[in-house]
Amino acid sequence: MMPTKNQFWENEVGKNGAKAGTFERKAFVTGLTPDGRPIIKFTGETIPSKKIYIHVKNYTPEVGDMVMLIGDVIIGGWRSVE
Image 1 (cartoon, rainbow, N blue to C red):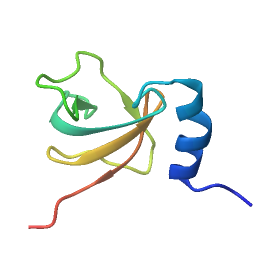
Image 2: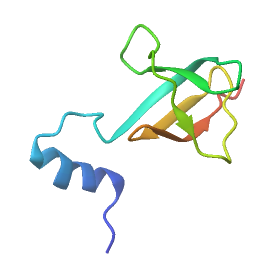
Image 3: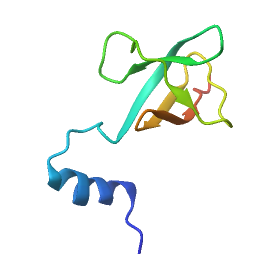
Image 4: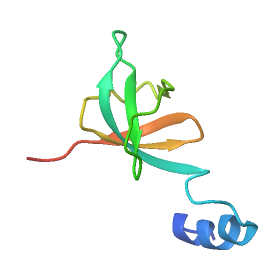
């Protein structure tokens, strides 16, 4: 049986002493580069990252989106419903 994300984190990542956020990270899109790549700010940080991250092809970033990264790739984003 496949473990849930939380079970994996607790059983595998947690016991190996990895810091939270080394595998999976969440951030917000704070801006876009001229070619449409997102500029992101990680949760818990005060300034946006200087690194420009790539994203999967089927996701089009917009300012304000919450995004999830695995490694250095944005795998998806969620827009707030107002």
